[in-house]
Figure 1 (spheres, rainbow, N blue to C red):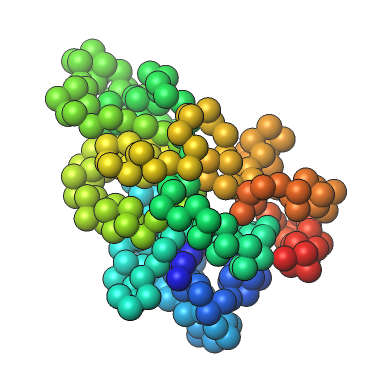
Figure 2 (spheres, rainbow, N blue to C red):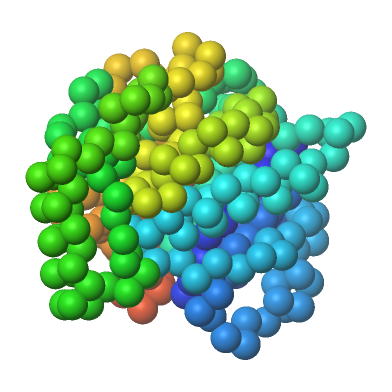
Length: 291
């Protein structure tokens, strides 16, 4: 069994297609809908699948870019999936994806691939040694990330300067190694349970971090016995580590289009990110037919 954990805040037609692509008796699907979304049709999505359970998180978070709310949402999905796991059929893998991602392999291929690589953790790492700018994300306290405007940005900048003057260093007295990478991961059931159990140890560190979602899982993993189980142990910023096809050279990230079809289907990756039906809806239809 696999657990798919989806963070969604828009493009619900694409979310529908994503859930249908994952609809399989071997999959359970957990979804978080951003608290800012009004009048979401939960009933329609509950009734969407034929084989998979679709479970929405009880709590809905107002997710803001760069803010702790992103970490909170990821933890909420992990803890919800762990809570609903059937002990008779535990999840071999937990996949964290967004509502604008799409599988580029069939369910049979995906299950076979992870069975062949059972016990491996598919987590992306940026580099062995983080640049000071990335360490600063947790070294200093970051405030007002939910209310980003000219005033709060100026205030945040001033507070950071004050912290530097007074030598604030939140990681100086901790033995926790900090790491960074893509927040979209595929991890074993054992590590997913470990994340949930160990989260209180990291919560304080992450609570006032900047873009902590790119630090969260990597930091928990590198400070755990699971670091020896990485699919790729070389930290070289290659997204094959997490089996995601993501193009940061053409966009932020790039939105895949129909003329990228050959690139997509020939990729060794399992998921591609990202898509937008208003930009190109035909590419999703072609992938659906392919998988």
